[in-house]
Length: 178
Image 1 (spheres, rainbow, N blue to C red):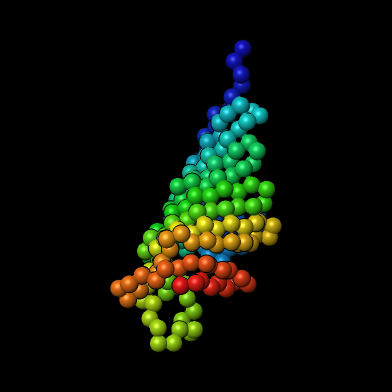
Image 2: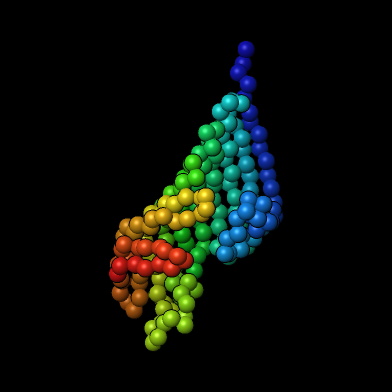
Protein backbone atom coordinates (compact mmCIF):
# COMPACT_ATOMS: atom_id res chain seq x y z
CA UNK A 1 0.00 0.00 0.00
CA UNK A 2 0.75 3.65 0.05
CA UNK A 3 2.94 5.02 2.89
CA UNK A 4 1.12 7.46 5.19
CA UNK A 5 2.05 11.11 4.76
CA UNK A 6 1.11 14.33 6.53
CA UNK A 7 0.18 17.42 4.57
CA UNK A 8 -1.37 19.98 6.93
CA UNK A 9 -1.77 23.72 6.45
CA UNK A 10 -2.56 26.29 9.12
CA UNK A 11 -3.03 30.05 9.17
CA UNK A 12 -2.95 32.51 12.05
CA UNK A 13 -3.77 36.21 11.98
CA UNK A 14 -3.04 38.94 14.52
CA UNK A 15 -1.63 36.60 17.20
CA UNK A 16 -0.09 38.62 20.09
CA UNK A 17 3.64 37.91 19.72
CA UNK A 18 4.62 39.50 23.05
CA UNK A 19 2.16 37.29 24.96
CA UNK A 20 3.50 34.18 23.21
CA UNK A 21 7.07 35.16 24.12
CA UNK A 22 6.05 35.32 27.80
CA UNK A 23 4.62 31.78 27.59
CA UNK A 24 8.14 30.65 26.60
CA UNK A 25 9.64 32.72 29.44
CA UNK A 26 11.25 35.12 26.99
CA UNK A 27 10.94 38.85 27.48
CA UNK A 28 12.83 40.69 24.76
CA UNK A 29 13.57 44.38 25.30
CA UNK A 30 11.64 45.23 22.15
CA UNK A 31 8.01 44.82 21.11
CA UNK A 32 7.10 41.93 18.81
CA UNK A 33 3.55 43.10 18.15
CA UNK A 34 0.89 41.05 16.40
CA UNK A 35 2.09 38.21 14.18
CA UNK A 36 0.38 36.56 11.23
CA UNK A 37 1.66 33.33 9.75
CA UNK A 38 1.03 30.31 7.61
CA UNK A 39 2.40 26.90 8.58
CA UNK A 40 2.80 23.69 6.61
CA UNK A 41 3.53 20.30 8.17
CA UNK A 42 4.64 17.76 5.59
CA UNK A 43 6.29 14.36 5.45
CA UNK A 44 6.02 10.86 6.81
CA UNK A 45 4.68 10.68 10.40
CA UNK A 46 8.20 9.85 11.67
CA UNK A 47 9.90 12.56 9.60
CA UNK A 48 7.73 15.70 9.64
CA UNK A 49 9.07 19.08 8.58
CA UNK A 50 7.28 22.25 9.68
CA UNK A 51 7.70 25.45 7.69
CA UNK A 52 6.26 28.70 9.01
CA UNK A 53 6.18 31.92 7.02
CA UNK A 54 5.48 34.90 9.25
CA UNK A 55 4.87 38.62 9.19
CA UNK A 56 5.23 40.89 12.22
CA UNK A 57 4.44 44.31 10.76
CA UNK A 58 3.84 46.34 13.93
CA UNK A 59 6.69 45.49 16.27
CA UNK A 60 9.70 47.60 17.14
CA UNK A 61 11.50 45.94 14.20
CA UNK A 62 8.77 45.08 11.67
CA UNK A 63 9.67 42.10 9.56
CA UNK A 64 9.00 38.90 7.71
CA UNK A 65 10.71 35.55 7.57
CA UNK A 66 10.53 31.81 7.42
CA UNK A 67 11.26 29.20 10.09
CA UNK A 68 11.79 25.52 9.23
CA UNK A 69 11.72 22.89 11.96
CA UNK A 70 13.08 19.46 11.05
CA UNK A 71 11.97 16.22 12.68
CA UNK A 72 15.19 16.19 14.77
CA UNK A 73 14.09 19.60 16.18
CA UNK A 74 16.80 21.49 14.32
CA UNK A 75 15.48 24.94 13.48
CA UNK A 76 16.59 27.09 10.57
CA UNK A 77 15.65 30.70 9.94
CA UNK A 78 15.52 31.79 6.31
CA UNK A 79 14.60 34.88 4.34
CA UNK A 80 14.36 37.04 7.45
CA UNK A 81 14.03 40.75 6.66
CA UNK A 82 13.67 43.28 9.49
CA UNK A 83 13.27 47.06 9.37
CA UNK A 84 15.86 48.31 11.86
CA UNK A 85 16.88 51.90 12.43
CA UNK A 86 15.55 53.07 9.06
CA UNK A 87 17.44 50.34 7.21
CA UNK A 88 17.06 46.64 6.47
CA UNK A 89 18.67 43.65 8.19
CA UNK A 90 18.47 40.36 6.27
CA UNK A 91 19.35 37.21 8.18
CA UNK A 92 19.62 33.44 8.09
CA UNK A 93 20.44 31.17 10.97
CA UNK A 94 20.07 27.88 12.76
CA UNK A 95 19.33 26.52 16.21
CA UNK A 96 20.06 23.07 17.64
CA UNK A 97 20.84 21.69 21.09
CA UNK A 98 20.51 25.07 22.83
CA UNK A 99 23.05 26.69 20.47
CA UNK A 100 22.32 29.15 17.68
CA UNK A 101 24.16 30.98 14.95
CA UNK A 102 23.06 33.76 12.64
CA UNK A 103 24.47 35.60 9.65
CA UNK A 104 22.97 39.09 9.33
CA UNK A 105 23.56 41.61 6.56
CA UNK A 106 22.69 45.19 7.47
CA UNK A 107 22.04 47.93 4.97
CA UNK A 108 21.49 51.55 5.95
CA UNK A 109 20.86 50.96 9.67
CA UNK A 110 21.02 54.30 11.48
CA UNK A 111 23.15 54.18 14.63
CA UNK A 112 21.68 57.12 16.54
CA UNK A 113 18.61 55.24 17.93
CA UNK A 114 20.92 52.65 19.52
CA UNK A 115 23.38 55.01 21.21
CA UNK A 116 23.03 56.68 24.60
CA UNK A 117 23.19 60.31 23.55
CA UNK A 118 24.30 61.38 27.04
CA UNK A 119 27.60 59.58 26.35
CA UNK A 120 28.26 61.57 23.20
CA UNK A 121 29.94 64.91 23.63
CA UNK A 122 30.18 67.10 20.53
CA UNK A 123 29.57 64.10 18.28
CA UNK A 124 26.63 63.86 15.92
CA UNK A 125 25.56 60.48 14.64
CA UNK A 126 22.52 61.91 12.82
CA UNK A 127 23.68 60.59 9.43
CA UNK A 128 25.75 57.62 10.63
CA UNK A 129 24.68 54.28 9.13
CA UNK A 130 25.88 50.72 9.68
CA UNK A 131 26.34 48.46 6.68
CA UNK A 132 27.88 45.02 6.44
CA UNK A 133 27.77 41.44 7.55
CA UNK A 134 27.79 40.14 11.12
CA UNK A 135 28.17 36.50 12.13
CA UNK A 136 26.74 35.88 15.60
CA UNK A 137 26.52 32.76 17.76
CA UNK A 138 25.44 31.87 21.23
CA UNK A 139 23.26 29.75 23.47
CA UNK A 140 19.69 29.82 24.75
CA UNK A 141 19.88 28.48 28.29
CA UNK A 142 20.03 31.32 29.27
CA UNK A 143 20.02 33.39 26.09
CA UNK A 144 23.54 34.65 25.47
CA UNK A 145 25.47 36.07 22.54
CA UNK A 146 28.87 34.37 22.72
CA UNK A 147 30.59 35.72 19.60
CA UNK A 148 30.12 38.45 17.03
CA UNK A 149 32.38 38.56 13.97
CA UNK A 150 32.21 41.19 11.27
CA UNK A 151 32.84 40.79 7.56
CA UNK A 152 32.97 43.89 5.41
CA UNK A 153 31.18 45.88 8.12
CA UNK A 154 31.47 49.61 8.40
CA UNK A 155 29.88 52.82 9.55
CA UNK A 156 29.23 55.51 6.99
CA UNK A 157 29.66 58.88 8.65
CA UNK A 158 30.62 62.34 7.43
CA UNK A 159 31.01 61.23 3.82
CA UNK A 160 33.42 58.40 4.63
CA UNK A 161 33.38 54.84 5.92
CA UNK A 162 34.93 53.56 9.14
CA UNK A 163 35.60 49.82 9.03
CA UNK A 164 34.30 47.83 11.99
CA UNK A 165 36.15 44.72 13.14
CA UNK A 166 36.69 42.69 16.29
CA UNK A 167 33.27 43.30 17.83
CA UNK A 168 33.00 42.34 21.51
CA UNK A 169 29.84 42.05 23.61
CA UNK A 170 30.03 41.86 27.38
CA UNK A 171 27.59 42.64 30.19
CA UNK A 172 25.04 44.46 28.00
CA UNK A 173 27.75 46.69 26.50
CA UNK A 174 29.79 46.32 23.36
CA UNK A 175 32.99 47.57 21.83
CA UNK A 176 34.38 47.43 18.34
CA UNK A 177 37.81 47.93 16.86
CA UNK A 178 37.61 50.65 14.22
